[in-house]
Length: 263
Length: 351
Image (cartoon, rainbow over all chains, first blue to last red; front, side, top):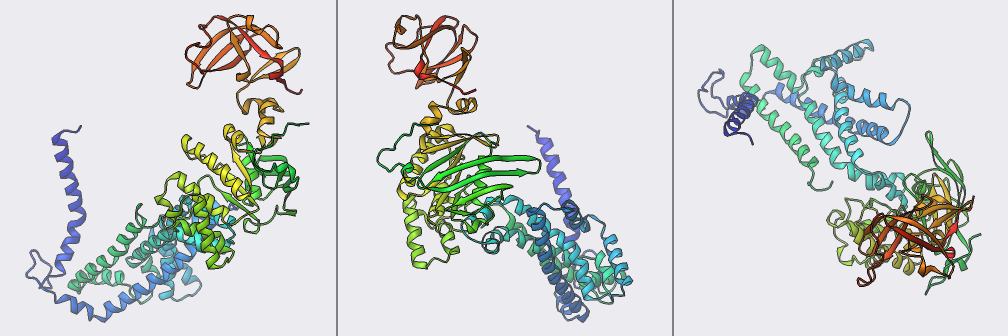
């Protein structure tokens, strides 16, 4: 048994670590309600005035809309390709199977800057103008990994006898997939998609190299901070982005917990 | 040739129909580098309870999976009702399988699980409902149709697995160690119930197990597998009383194998008697030898004695603990005892 002192010291340490992680976030949240546009401590007064002003900022709106569109499409593509790759690697033994599973996971292991530069030079080489579509392609590379990993982990948990039983009972391959396999992996699929979207939504590095003149929300924030402009709006956006990303991550966590409905 | 056929009381002996429901010839299955099934020939008659018995890795489960269609054979034919199904997909064969791990669909209720095969075959809704109800009644789970499989015990899950298969009225039902995951008491109850259900529905059962007692107590006929080959096919009594090889003799029941006059004899423990003197064995066809008592183990129903014969071989003998008063063999470890068996109670192995 650890002594009382050890427990107190450990407890203090945990509190310090948590403070280290969350105090900056708390300060940003607090600044979003700052009455003054000068960021100083303590805040000069409580105000909600930055919320409407941010909402009516066209640049912010465009950036937000671009981020959502890019995230949704990249997630959609990642679900298709990531699931397909997970099935191929799980179900079949083929030449290059190990290589495939390695290559699929690579974009998340490589530093984002390498993926970004590689994509950028690829687009330039083929004279593909940087646009919404190049952002989507860039985001899809790492979103695939998330979906792939989630689905593959689930497929490995589902006993092979389930699909065998379905075929044994007279269902062909397609209806076995639709009626047995898909429902058993659905929560992993949803979790993977939510995490992929969250990842896409706040991605900066790859986006920097694949976006043209357009700004996604994180890019706009980055630009604003660098120029020291519109800092109150940035605080508001950070608060909103946090809320928006927290929800899918929380949901993903919930649906993959053992003991939750279906699994 | 094997000749002893034990007629089952109260039901038609399946031998009488003589018709092969399933005929397997020259079946072979090789996986990368290893051969799981070497050369299997098998005839299974309509209405039979047929068991594939063998240790793990002997090829019995692979044979079952080949019949179900989960694996494709490397060579050989699988004739089911006169049609070669060896290359057909599982959903194109008139067989259903009961899985060792139950393989119930976790996202469906018990009733939906059972209805799965009927729905896949587009059976009309009304008929589907009544057949599901009937199947539930047969496995005594009528009240649990709306439960999820996760809410059932192991024994109940396997009943659902069974109901899900027989509701389709397949020509042949394959059971892959269906009781393997259950505890002993439940397993024994389920053995009786399975046998009862098989006799009620009249479906041919092809049962895979490594449990020799289970095989002996349930089967009409047994095929004993070893190293991807069939060592012997016969009724439980034939397999037990006249094993065709040393492997069968050792795997099914307990055997002591000794050599006398150049013949290898199989001694079953219940046929070997022990006594303090040879007096009781005069006449009556007893073969008498002497040996040293090595061990006596009391196991409730009987006492197991291990004796080393003067020739050096170890022989096992069991003695029922029928009555406490006469106490059985009064010998201590290391004492010289008389070992006797009737020549009719032992048999010699070929070769």
